[in-house]
Image (cartoon, rainbow, N blue to C red):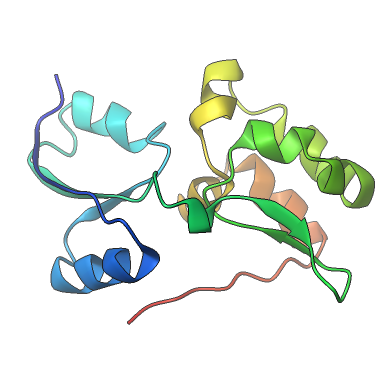
Length: 140
């Protein structure tokens, strides 16, 4: 079914960063709506995976003290579209991600994965760009 070599499952962001540094060839697995299809098709057969899906520190939405909206990368499209902060402050983003795929994809797909994929169909990326969104990246 899924032909991959190793699956790493970090329990913290720090561990995920360490694993990424130690295994730079490994692919990051979050929602999996894109990468698992490619593995199943054989396009990424035998790859190593770092599964970050369970890292709750990377999930959620909040309004910061300065009025900016913080959307963590593992937040699903469904959570983005339904969240009260999004509905009040950036409803166009909620509308945009509500058009992605079907309900199954919106429930598992993540906004971070949608941005990182770099495909022209990244529905959230154009809306975030229009709002001058700032991405925060972390590494070791």
